[in-house]
Length: 397
Image (cartoon, rainbow, N blue to C red):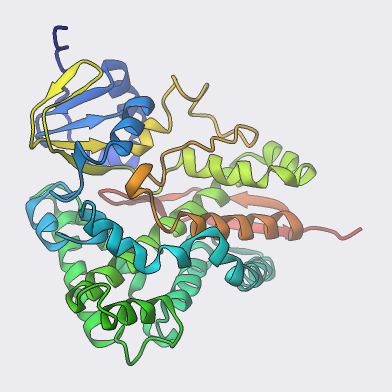
């Protein structure tokens, strides 16, 4: 079979204008093909659902151990970490907290998470008008993840800034956000060395469990810092962005909000639809371990491949009318958390947090109103820096 010619597009995926509204560009790329060569970045972008999922499931040919970011410095910093390793090392690192982040283990903390969600919504109702990012979405995950990792309450103020920076650091070399993000990773590492230590993390916490694994010889002592960094990073900003997106989407569509109030059993579908249509993490990288073929396009060994989750989630071939937020869609197979070996270990926690807040909104809130959102620009994350909002209480029968 003759190899297909790879379509090429001269565009900067990390340009401010693209980050502000990337979906028209993603649609253009999908029209060109399943995989598109981006000469400015010198990587291939996989933008359709079926091919993106296939790449994620094929961890032997599309490896993470050669780097998942789009610049050499980031890949050096994260080399050998849980997100940038292959079996057997990846499996070993994931085993440290894997079970504690699974659905069965999270049952033990669900009651606490739901109680915090109830308090969050109650406080928002008491305010009347508030910022759905800084006074709502940014509060909840920091509380939850901070407690699970065991970070002292008075030592959490910079966690979100570092998490945001860590995702910026994935970007291309020379990008100002990339440089700021690399500095944030260095700051976070220093924080872990001095604050998130075995002596200061709360006993019985997930953070303490990382040090216990090192003491038991399961992982090396040197693995503790990057492993803690990975969980402090991934568990924060992505959930913040999804929570803010949920408030925005429901506030902008009062008809669907009313329908959800009448049919609260749709809540799990709504969580998945929010995650599909506004994927908090837009893309991740892989490297080809051998020569591969994607939809007829041959790619040599050692090439960087960007799996564009956010584009795959809006692929017309997978989801009819993909740009429409539809509470009855239930896109359970979305790629927001990846797929396969490197599927996000914290996805069950993130869904639990989103579901807990959504259930409380349905229970306590009559109307959701939102103003003009202010977009946050990040090389990988899609989120907001501000969203004026107001809630009115639901009248009890």
